[in-house]
Length: 337
Image 1: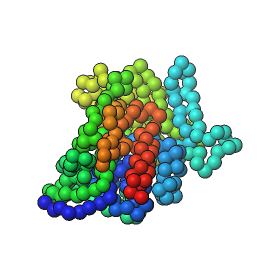
Image 2: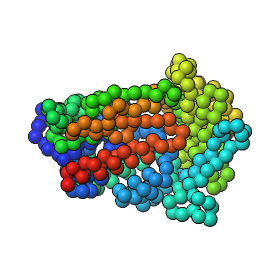
Image 3: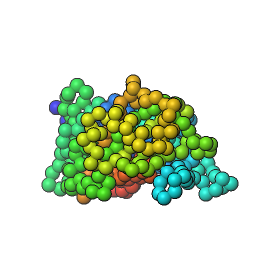
Image 4: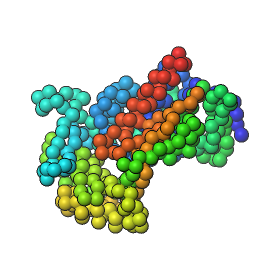
């Protein structure tokens, strides 16, 4: 086992919350190590963003222009088939068409590309990024967390010390309990999401063609996210009581749910589900709405999905992840100053 490395901050997880907190701390001249268990780029769900993320937080990071150049689908608002009216209704990020400005839009992003941009940007800012590294345990004494132990891609173990450990490793975090709390799941949002990707789906009329479309139906609701002119992310959120039917054959379950939602069924009338590559799998997520009873202890803080997540109907996931990272970074920078 190698020992002896010391950093001001060690961040666990290279998604948006991890790269954001690492970047903000590194921008103040502090030594930051970021450990990511996978090799980027990698797949992730959560593709519909908000303006406060892409123009606010990404602007503070200095990465907004690079994100704009990436060519992601522009999102000017959202469209819903929800409530008592049978007709869809929309909202726009702009106050009015005449008062739309350069920040009156967000993006629908392929997370493989978006997350990779943020992680590479953190490297440019001086963050030491090590991929294919898995955290084994947190090290501590009677007073506080002092660092962690991790294994690299060869299986070798390493111990690093840090004044602060940030858990940004998402909903599958293996160390969130080290903050001293428990994960409390929502009874109201005890849902299952089942989702896949389609080629050739319809688009809403411009300027709403880049909007997220959410449609309620008897069993729950659908998201319909245009990632490009040809590719669409489609997912159903249903009650936990449908768990057995969904997990038995996810692809068949998704097809059956689409048939029960007339609006989504019509949008996909001429589309084909993608069955190869990174988008070729129908995936299932369950019990994803939760909050930790404690977000920090001396020497350690949780950010992003490691700390909490709520129902995705308002596309808040990436924003809450990056905003919590901003708050954590500002607190850490204040202490390290």
